[in-house]
Image 1: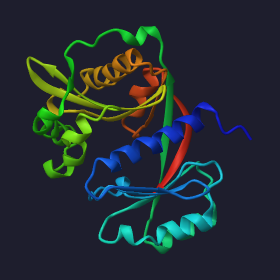
Image 2 (image 1 turned 30 degrees about the vertical axis):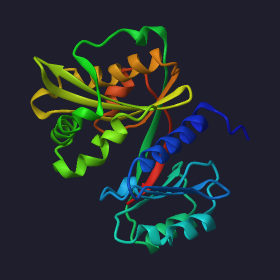
Image 3 (image 1 turned 90 degrees about the horizontal axis):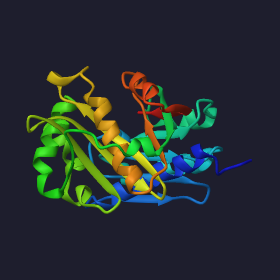
Image 4 (image 1 turned 90 degrees about the vertical axis):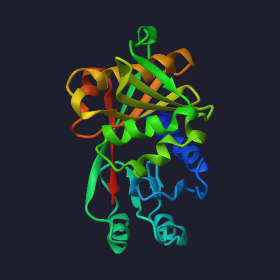
Length: 251
């Protein structure tokens, strides 16, 4: 079986990105088992940022069961995530045994970058660690989330990390949307596309995504990947992303 398809490479890059994220946190941890099952701990109260992750095409149910018993998850909300929709019943049983129900699909989307993506995006700018507080406020507003819940995504170590880039889209000097990019080789992961409530459905989500693509192309990225929400899927479809596969997450 070919394990170097674009989806395989992007899945490995997705895990690399989350390992880099964990490394920026005081108690961050990523351990990869022999057959590719990862234990991820960021220490936050966000379930999708802690847990057991298998990005291989044939995840090992026994290895997943062992990782799910890790003491590192104590006191933290966590999740179990695997590639594909046809989940082994043994893996589903592990999730159920730890109270991780229900399951939901996560569309994993890819897009090849071209020279046309290099066009600058008006109002877009990169954010540095010195602007952490402003970026955190914009994230919280864009995601309708508590301010402290966005701290992990706005930490100066993250914003100034050499493989990561945060962006604000502004109108009249005020933030209207956010974006975040993480690079792994010639791939770029797109995260945290959020538009502040007064500015939704005005094209700013597209602008935020385009800002990532423009900067990423200039830095040598040639493939972009992301997990889409149901609400965000039409935007990414329209921008030329295609569904590579669905993943499954238990929370």
